Image (cartoon, rainbow, N blue to C red; front, side):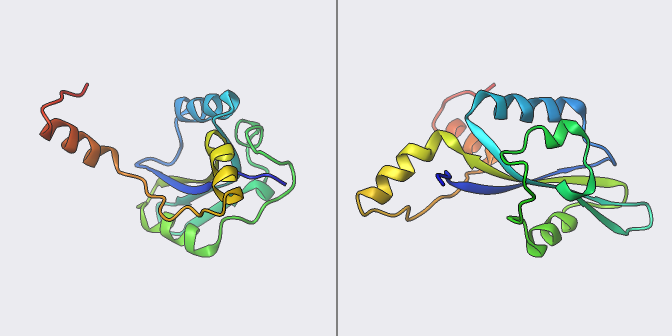
Length: 142
């Protein structure tokens, strides 16, 4: 089975629901083929501070389940991932925890492995850091 590089992404929202525009943007990205959604969980904290986790086995709405790479239940997310997501939210807030397969990088990854190479580093530069670096070079961002 071919599978591209995987990444866990946690997006936290300061309210109890995730905007439909966020779901639509993720769905469009998946439909474009650039990424596949390999696993998903929604972590919320109620008004009393109790954490709730909903995953694919919990009958998530079709808007979420229709984006998943494989219809079989996956176990790529672990308690540490979900715990980290819970730490990012307060009462009446929600976090989206997604395992994204970078399909755009699949062929490159295969060729690196086939040639005996390894990916020595894979790091995401936060958007805020990139903007500061670009502006320090005199380039304006919009």
